[in-house]
Image (cartoon, rainbow, N blue to C red; front, top):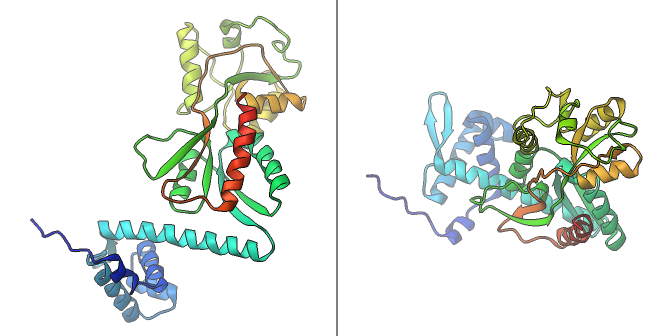
Length: 317
């Protein structure tokens, strides 16, 4: 059995580690070649090899395996490269926040957003934030659940808003429930069912639908509901989670779709869509905010979270 490597103390590593080492590590990890990494960083190959040896000596473990085709990261290399990416993202975020402060702002934050939070929660929270703390700038990045959480883990985002679908075994994140809301069935204004006061599951099953993809939690809940009623929906006219595409399709045809209550009420208030008088028990995970577990919120992020909580309280009522 190989001996357990002795990892140097942190003060030993910190006294020698330089940003150029992390730059090289990230380039080696991405390119898989000392020659290519050296060219990328504008240095000679011998200098890059020397810095790699310094890195491995600092941490007391091999970070890459040398092969005829280049280099391959070891398990230690994978772990250190991931942390280097997080550190780089944190430094980039700090630099941008300092630049914003120097320009007269009071902070800058990066927020990942799922569609469920975009039409209502985010605009209201931003309006409240602007009224209370006009100098805070929020950079929004829309995306899918897994992609946003990956960006958060890498330090590219400060928080993520959306459905809380995290595995309880993911200690890298901490979550906060903002509100829960039911799902509504919507149609175009003037749809034959829009004014009906008694809508049955059978009546809905006879309609054409826009549904989420089969793997989406809401689609699975809808399919289960109609199966429990002994009914089967027709093949959907479209499968989509795009609010823009769904709105266009709903307004131009007699299809139905399911939306979170806050989003449905938003479109109903604009006179764009009608909410049918049907209240299915289609529960989904609550809407909430996710942060990195071991990272303290900056003052700017804390102000944004405070605004979110106030506005979420109104939506969840």
